[in-house]
Image (cartoon, rainbow, N blue to C red; front, side, top):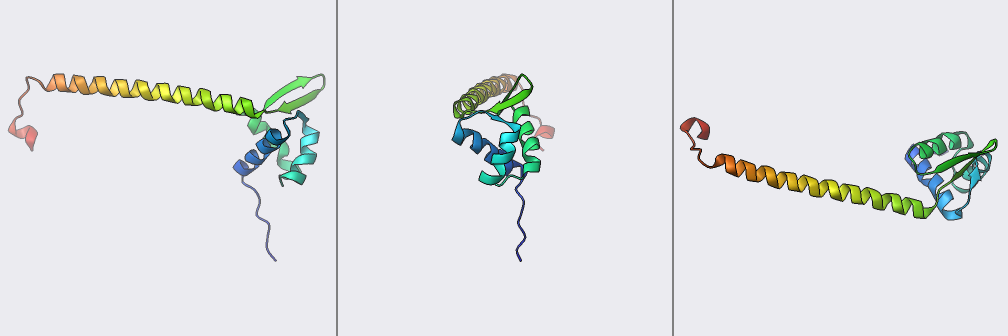
Length: 122
């Protein structure tokens, strides 16, 4: 009598993204509520919640056409998003290292002309 362990929210998000990347198709919510439990084991009750969290994070696109909402995500968009994030982080790293170097130089300049006293050494 083993109990089934439910999926974590992050596992559900990953599996939902797999659906989009594998099919490279556009879906409505009702389509995803049918597909996700069968293919990825995500309960139908949590599909909407998981999908909304992905839309909020910008990983899945959503567009309202007429009275229907259509959802899609393509692998190329995820790749471009990762590249942009990498560029931003690299620029922040270079700015931080430049600032660190300038602060080190200013510390060295401040030390010139100062002499250590006995109180400072202790």
